[in-house]
Amino acid sequence: MSTIDYSQAIPNNVNLSTDRVLQRALEQWQPNFLSWWGDMGPVGAMAHNVYLRTATSAHPSGWAHFDYVKMPDYRWGIFLAPQVVDRKIHFGEELGKAVWQDVPGEHRANLRRIIVTQGDTEPASVEQQRHLGLTAPSLYDLRNLFQINVEEGRHLWAMVYLLHRFFGRDGREEADALLQRRSGQEDNPRILGAFNEATPDWLAFFMFTYFTDRDGKFQLCALAESSFDPLARTTRFMLMEEAHHMYVGESGVARVIAQTCEVMKRYQVEHPDQVRAHGAIDFPTLQRYLNFHYSVTLDLFGADQSSNAALFYSSGLKGRFEEGRRQDDHVLKDRTYTILDVVNGALAEREVPMLNALNEVLRDDFIKDSVSGISRWNKVIEKADLSFRLAVPHKAFNRQIGTLSGVRISPDGELKSQNEWVSGHAGWLPTADDRAFVASLMKPERQPGRYASWISAPTHAINKQPLDLEYVRFS
Ligand code: BYC
Image: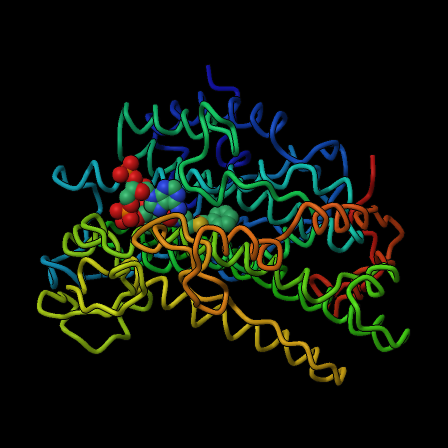
């Protein structure tokens, strides 16, 4: 017997109350999700009352409902963006035909693989961030962390809905496996590399939400073009939530920079040791964190030449970022794209068929978007009249996936021998000392309206509330 009142417990616009098969699948899965949330969700935070945004409908007035909620009581819902009437496939071999409301048999395995890969990242990020609530620099930041965590949980529900609704028994098995893999676990890790890295401190968290959630944006935008309409509609709705996650990252790093500038000006110091002595994070450490998160995130786009990517596009499963705005034939058979290759141990440009280079096309779109935020960070430094500038490292720096994984390249794009790489490493990527210093700053600040020494106050509060609202009420 069902113990769940679906329309209340799981807000949805997928007619859950009349879909018995889906109900049964979710009824079995939901307790496992809650048990996973208890084991792997935010540590020690289950009884806190948190000022959270909950999506209660897909209507513009319903997707951002704010109130105090205990996280295990958060209503993880299933929402698809409204259906576009008469939507047509707009790229690939089947261009012009009606989009699919069900999964075509020939695309079943690939669609499942894409949905599972996407779904796997959502619980992974919650696992990566589970200790951060113990050291939040303010109640405002703590609330944002929890908001992101519950929404990643909802994004997992979104993918599980697709698996349960459209993929039968193997979909149910995949949905179970999403709760069984663990970030960073040796024998059953998460699928993609970046989601097995630790997010040990708040600087890493802000960099993660700036860069890695931005991969989320680009992948979701590519999936929002899909000919499989339920996937397109689900990801369109997820994108509305993703925007806040990237804002947390961009504004978080900007606030760290602002505080560093403030300390450097107030005490007239420049050397990293002096900046650290005043409880702020020096610019070279920020740059090394940036180098790490950027390069690890670039790998998330997959190999620069991928027959999977070509197949996903040609068969209409996954489009390009802003596919509809591009002025070409949307089939791409005769087009080429320039990628970086390694020729005789050196980097060289090479023209390859564009279809095979679509991971690279998406990665390049991501790079453009990332760079624009970094120039906004640099404006903060410029305004303080300081000369340091942050920059993204070369695309080939510290890569583990694809052609560029075979070479050692410095952040400024120079080819290095293995020995040179080992000796340069400490200047390019966070060292144990950097991590220990940042960890030493991670002391929780729990007074409303107060902030840790290493970060400035935010410029905007949540939902037009005062900045010193008690965003989290502790149990
Ligand atoms: N780490 O042919 P390739 C988000 C594997 S983030 C480890 O290039 P393909 C979020 C690959 O699986 C967005 N392995 O693959 C952000 C394949 O393995 P198999 C997540 C990797 O298929 C923050 C082999 O290498 N969504 O939402 O062209 C918080 C050959 O590679 C990696 C998606 O990714 C890696 N980095 O491209 C929360 C969208 N990269 O099958 C959430 C769905 C590749 O040979 N995924 N491999 O064993 C896809 O579209 C594609 O699977 C990928 C890979 C773009 C990821």
